[in-house]
Length: 71
Image (cartoon, rainbow, N blue to C red; front, side, top):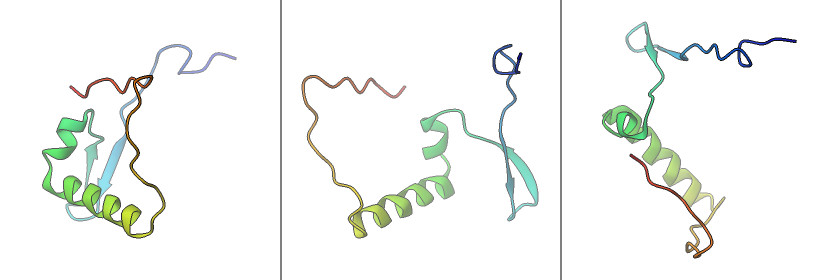
């Protein structure tokens, strides 16, 4: 079966904003997200909730791990 994904056809995701009543394209990079104060605040709230509920913990990076770079 031939799908859009197999054919290399993709469409950008759109997010509907209740505040403005309009659609906004999904951010394409981390840099774009952190430049938006509302998105940055949402990420901070999510991070704080994860820490508060102790659902994960930060561990040191080992030499065998390659995390790459955000550009």
